[in-house]
Each structure stands twice: as C-alpha cells, then as structure tokens.
Length: 201
Image (tube, rainbow, N blue to C red; front, top):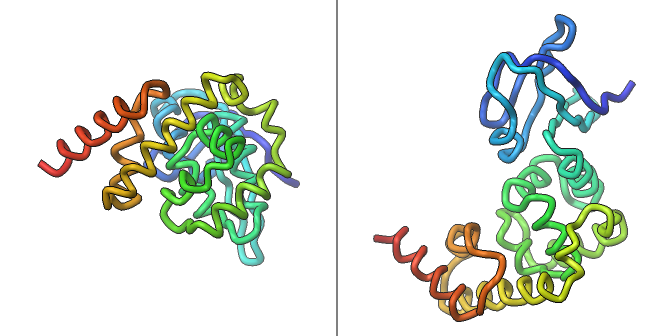
C-alpha cells in the first residue's frame, strides 16, 4: 500500500520533520523548508501530500503542503542521480514556480546554485524534467508570457554578472533570492550588490 496524503493533527513540528497523528497513529514525515513555513502550529488539523519512499531496509514519508511541490519532488528523484536529499535541497532553493521557469527557460546556471549540482548535472536534469513534467499545467502563465521570459533573462544576466565579479554560488543565491522578478538588469544588479555589501559589512 502506498500513502498519497494524510490528514491529521500536528503533534510535533521541527525544521526537517513533523509527526502527524491520524486516528491514534503518529506518522513521522520528512518535510521541505517551504512546508515548514507554510504548515500550521502544533495541535492544528493538517493535510499533507505524501511521497511514500521505499528502500530495501526501510520506508520514509516525505510530506508537502502543496501538491505541486510533491509532484516536483517525485519528478526530481526519478531523474538519474537525484536522491531524496538532493531533491529536497533543490526545493529548498527554489519553489515550484521558480523551478518551472528554470526548466522552461533551460537555465542550467540557476540549478548550479543548489549545493551538490554541477553544470553537467544541471543540464541533464533540465532535459529529464522537461520530458517528465507537464510544465504547462504546473508553471504559472508568466513562464510563457513575454514579460515573464524577459524577467527570467534579466535574472540570468545578473547572475552571470555576479559570477564575472568573482562571487561564489552561495553568495549569488543569497543576493538574488529576494530580488524583484522584474526590472532592468542594471537596477537588479545594483540591488544584488547592495545586498552583498550589507551581508559582508
């Protein structure tokens, strides 16, 4: 039997794990950072979408507050060389909407900001995900719109500029994670550099 979702009372809430009590049984569930932020307080009734992961020696439940995130996780770990830990790392860096844009625009450099992913892995992962996911159903309309494509291109230009200035992947991610989705490259770059300066000061 495979578990697809659970509805119950949240009895324990930790950064990477929750315990959800369903009819007297407490289920240990591994969660992503976005699920941790979105889920309610202890004692609240909660619906969690589950990926039931089977291994030779045990079974692990991975839980997500959003169905789209669960679908992305399952697609990620189905790709060659991506296990649950790396799948969660990717979803810790990008939410489903951002990941949809990255895949649709074949932005391998964005995936390289995830710890443990190099250029070859990123390029392969994009190709595999494009064949596995129905992006039109999961991605937002901004992915295919001219303004969305331009915003993605500008973000990519900013990332390349920061790389050229010698900043590492972690620094670039921290500088860009709260940047606006739209704006001129020069303005976005100034904001990113200001963020980097505030972090280092």
